[in-house]
Amino acid sequence: MSGKVAKHDEQKKFILNYLDDLYRYAMSLCHNQTDAEDLVSNTVLKAIESAENLHDKTKVKPWLFRILSNQFIDQRRKSKRFPHLPLGEQEDEPERFSLYEAVKASSFTENGTPEKALLQKFLDEDIQQAISELPEVFRVALVLSDKEELSYQEIAGILGVPIGTVRSRIARGRTILQQKLWLQAQEMGIRTRAPKESKEKECACGKEETASGNQLTEIGKKRVLEKR
Amino acid sequence: MAKKQHIRKITCEEAEKSFNDLIDGFLKGKTKEELEHHIEHCAKCFGRVEFEKKLKERIRSTQFKGSPASLRRKIAALFEET
Image 1: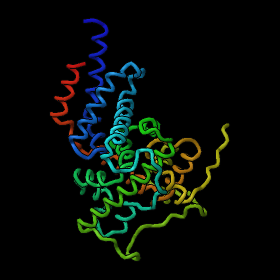
Image 2: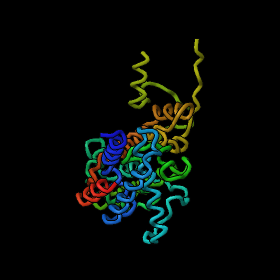
Image 3: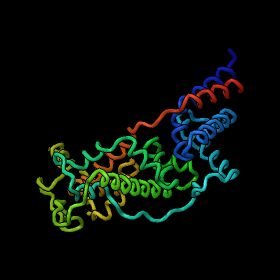
Image 4: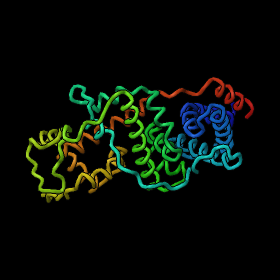
């Protein structure tokens, strides 16, 4: 086998290793199997053609994702079939919402840790549904970060936006996702308690803070023990 | 002897702004120290960060469908041609 053929086969192997990841990402962009398959096929073709540009083999995944993103943008420009926000568009400041605080202030009680129990209550389909309902720019950033485990820097490279934009999109995406999961939780019958029933303790943050042992959280206690 | 460094106390509101950066491993230096110090002493923020970490882990472990056989066939054909 010649060196060129061996190298070509190696490149194919690299690409095949990421086929599921590429398809998942394509589905998060296209929302239908036919378009996602076309997008992945075009990406793979482009990747084979431009494999010489890949110098760092540890960066195969972000490199492939970048090609897929560019293919998606090109495809959308040509066909105008995807009436969503462009991947590079700016978005509003995130509004505040915390699923943790909503659950803590709810009627849901489960062995002292209702918030953990709630996460177990959600089926994979519930979470996928909530993600699929996110606006595109936030969904893409969240999927790349939380599902594909890419760094802010890698995501910025894939989407061609500054790291600050990636951070704000992930933050906004997580907030909207938590709002959607809270709606699902309410559909399961979990209700917000009246304010006086809430047992959540406010901290004395920014005020006179005294670091006595019994005020420390679990991490704090561990660290105190380590220091001894 | 190393001089003990003073860590600025931050409010829950300030802390909250950096939760994502902490969870995603993007936080460094002084800001990280201040946030960790706050979390060590604030049960509410500690609980929230732990929850956000678990939610991220829950999303990561969600089983998405793999690539369909039809796509694998297309890719195999593509490889044959190139």
